[in-house]
Image (tube, rainbow, N blue to C red; front, side, top):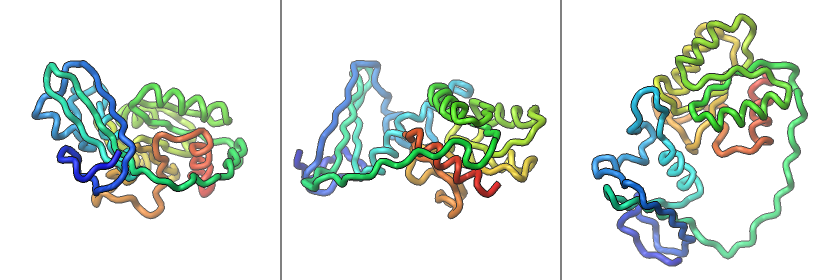
Length: 230
């Protein structure tokens, strides 16, 4: 697909060749007062305790990280359509060496507090970690994680937390946990290339960030990095 400028894009893509992906439904549509905000990192229509509802913000982060553009067209009762544009190229893909999976328990036994509000992703991540020899404590949000940490009498080596969650964001949770457990290492998970982790909206230089979606090998490699200096 070749395009000059698409008035619906945010921002408009420059002239060039693009691969176009369109996803549409015939659902209830999105109200006008919500439509302009669905890609905002901290915007959700979910009530407290019903999850974050931030899937579209994650989609936006993944598309823009790939140098793409995404537009949305919706109206109440008329369904919703998303159009994603990705730059096209004639270059031949590079042949990459398959990364070696990290050895199990390179760093010795460890206990990880996993905090993720999306249940399916939390279950998959927990399964990967436990199958590789880690003891895993889980929580669905910040307050629940604080309670788990308070009730657990043994040592916690690593806090592995999502960045954007209801009640407490990942950075706030990390500050609360490390205040009572100073030796805990911290690693973040996010669907954004540069999530809002600190007050300036940028990452600390030593922040360990696992970008969603991640592979088993990527997850385990980051965990090893996070624990090596404990």
